[in-house]
Length: 164
Picture: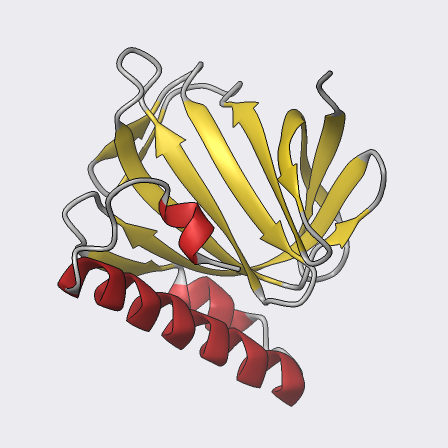
């Protein structure tokens, strides 16, 4: 039996930006993994096309300042990229996942190449110092973790399980 969730993305100020459905894949005491399908119009993010119907496997954490989207092609299920949102820790209830997006993102291609996105937007937020520390730590952690996984060829299989 599947469990449905509503994912609610907010900006730093708590304003809802996006709401969409997802289905539970796995849940622990500090993380949840859901499956969702892209329902908006086609977009291009640094040479990666995200199309309606592309499958997202999304992992949210209650103790970490990021979430990770593993984006799969709708036609062949190949991984297009990992999109990491620097965010507040998720608030998870029985039926919803809510987080505040803090603008800074890390895009990781299947070959391991990484690009930091939206640094200007992040800098304009003028976050409190504790938020700045946590977001910088999260960004550095993600970059180092992905580099380690690729350097040691541990990126094969379910990479999201490498993040606990």
